[in-house]
Structure formats: C-alpha cells, structure tokens
Image (cartoon, rainbow, N blue to C red; front, side, top):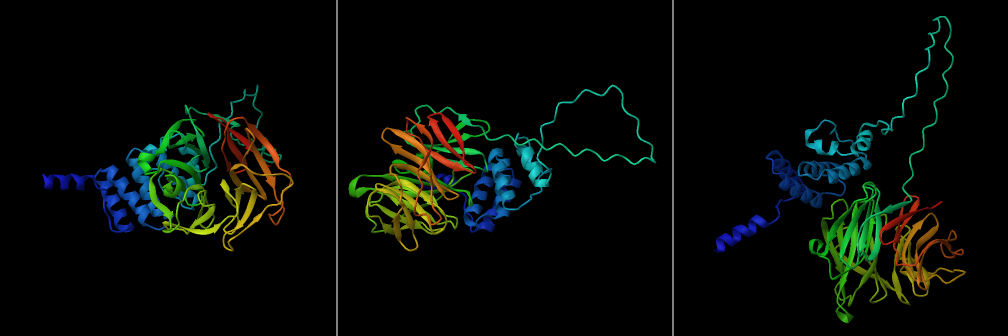
Length: 423
C-alpha cells in the first residue's frame, strides 16, 4: 500500500523541469507525443521560470493552449506577442487551426501580416445603364476623384448588460487586450469575467482554485506585464492577516503570493495598485499603513503610516507619486520620500471607494450620504490643489469603476456596465 500511495502522489504531482529551457523542451516533446495537457503544464512552467514577456516562451504556451482546447487563451497570448513587437508565422500552422476558426482571428491575422483590418463589405450598388467607353490612348486620363474618407470605427457600447444573480461587487477592472472585464463578487468569494464582445459571463477564478483567504478585498491589473494582483484577508483583531496573489491575467493561474514582512503585526490589505516599473503598493486598513513589494518580491514591507484612517482607494500616477483616499480627504503620497500631503480642495472629498489617474485628474467612485457618485477631480500642475469636483454620474446602489483608454466604466446597476467618455 505505501508504494501504491507514493505512485498515486507522483502521478498527481505537477510536471517537474529544471529551468525555462528544460520546461520548454519538455512542452514541445509532450505536444509531439499528442499529450497536450502535459504540454500546456510544461509551457506554463516555462513562463514562470523564464524571463518576463519572452516571446518564444509565450509562443510555446500559445501553441499548447491551442492544441489543448484553449483557443481563446491562445488568441489572447498571441495578441500579447504582437503587442511586444513579435510576428509569429502561424497563418498556415496546423497547430493553430482552432485559433484561426475564432471570429476574432481576422483582426489578429491582419496585425500579424501588417494588412489593414478587415472591413465590413459595402452593399453593392446598382450597375449603370450603360458603361462609358474607354477614352482614346492619346487622351490623358482625368485625375481620379479623391477616395472617400473611411468610416470611423464603431465606438465601444455605452452599456453592457450581463447576468450575475446576487452579485455583491467590490472591484472592477478592464483587460484591453482580451476585451474583458474582471468583476469582483464579495458574496460568492470569486472573480467573474464579462466578455465585452460576446457579453458572456463566466467564473474566472474562485477561492478554492486560487488559495484566497476568507475574504476578497481588492484587485488591480498590471497591464504592462499582463498580471492581476488580488488581495484577500482573514481573521479579526490582532489575528488579522492578508495575502496578495499574483495571477496570470489571461488564464487566472496563480504565479506567486506575497505577504507582509514578519513583525508587521495585524494586516488587512484593502487596496492595491501597480506602478509602471512593476512595484506593487498595498493599503493596510488595520494599521493605516502603506506597504510596498518590489518587482519579483514575495514580501510587502511597510513604507509609512498615515496620521488618520484611510480607505481602500489608491491610484498610481507614476513610479514616485500615489494618491490615497483618507477619512479627512485626498492625500498625495511620495513613497520614496515617505511623505503624505493633503490635497487642498474647495469641498470635502472623502468616502472614495476607488480612484484612477488620467491626464491631471483623479476619477473615482465617492460615497456621499446614501448615494454613490462618479466624480472627476482636476488638479493643478503640482498635484496638490484641486478644482471643484465634477459629478459624472450617480447611483443609489453601491458601485465600482475602472478606467480603460479614454473611458471610465462603472456598474450603473448590479448587471449593467456603463461607459462614460472622458475628454
């Protein structure tokens, strides 16, 4: 029996490989044998062990995703390769046949070849009564009329309805590469995916599969690296603890977990954001503190403690400037200097549930009395003085929001995402 048990455990263990090159080799060999699930697992291990955004490893993973019945994931991975400047030659590769059968392949295929994106064919016009004869060769042809301007591309939809009964949202994010929204559901302890194109809603990741603590509290997308940072918490009083999980955005696969350094005491992370250089900051509501994890680190170290209680709203401007929503108003934080200065405002700006930064303004969801307002706060060039807030939308129910390009998206009700153009 002990031998049988060991064999069973070995069979259930994830595939082992020494380094990224070994994982890549074993993935290719497994695919050649037709063992596509194993090829997929080895490819993911190659991604984890290799350098960030390695196009060769990403292509190995995309191939394994296609062969193992995950063509949608493969399409997204190929899109990321193109975003990095790669042009994989897969137009006739049989391993990617499932990907080329997807409706969105035409757009990606055009990007790979450098051709213009496919256009919707115009309805044929009625033929003329009689075709004019060609002019004599000795006669110079008249200059052709300038081509008609191309029709502008259709703007994103103003509203996106989806089905998620009993949703209790705590955060919203947008992945522009795959054109999907990530929605946090506090009650069901899960993350959902809402597809912007198909409008389908599916479970993205649950507590049991990702190893989340008892309560999900925040998440944020690092779009440059294709990562999703998710904070979860458990316990009460001095027993409070939190962990921040790094997930592969395209698949929801857990890459690492980062915790507060030892001797940090009780910690409850309620807000998280990533700066352009890959540093991740987390707000601790238990101790009113700011924590930081350097790129690749599994440890959050305390940066500073605030003088008054803070909320869950944090926005990164760049590698050196953050904004935090506090009980007494907005704070401009310099994490390198470990300083925080109150933003001078003509009105009280408290109760922020979320914040994002765009072109000299803070945009977010603010709770005022029993209502939730989507507001924009324009700042002076120094970023320390605010103009009167501009109310963009209001909701009687709890709402969350996110920035995507030149638009802010928010839940206007529990099953509708509404778009607000930001000029």
